[in-house]
Picture (cartoon, rainbow, N blue to C red):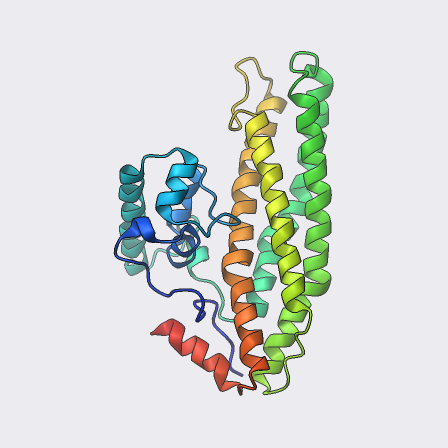
Length: 282
Ligand SMILES: [Fe+2]
Ligand SMILES: [Fe+2]
């Protein structure tokens, strides 16, 4: 059975421009996952807002462009070296070694992110409740809003993941199977469902930005107790994980799904998926 590769689509470039300031942040993150750490370090949005060029993103984040380009180049050189030395254990390396099958990629997203989020979100809500109960009077402008924002984010993410697992991801699996069997893809409605997922990702991103603003970049006050510190640390981790998660969906899984659906609707045979594979490996 021929499986479509996640590595490229005709709508997503397979190479970066020589002038990295012109490269789209989403393409840098997709083609060179090592750059994600640089984006995270500078709070540059590489998932929902990844359509911007590096120059635009730097300006928006208030980061000097030249040093940022240097960091990006260093991360690319470092990850190329690590690839050659086959260091598959380095942190984040799996982002550059994703499965070929879109269904397998969806399963990986569920196993790696959805399961963890279902455990982590209630833990953060519980900690936020405790911190607000004990320290709410000391920070009345921050802690009640922070608790409410985390709770709202939990509700939105749980519903969003449920929909992906119940509807969107199974539809992607059916599409991939149909194309591999040279059958009609039957993917009507998938583009709308994906657009809705992307819209919800934007709302989640806004929630994370609000949390970042309320917590002054996840930095607790000096007098903070351990629960307070644990909460802020957990929120920083949550932001990092959700950004990676949304990056994989917005910049890899969904564009390749739409590409595959378009190929199927055009009456292409299963070799169409094979072309995606061979183009990606060129
Ligand atoms: Fe997801
Ligand atoms: Fe999602």
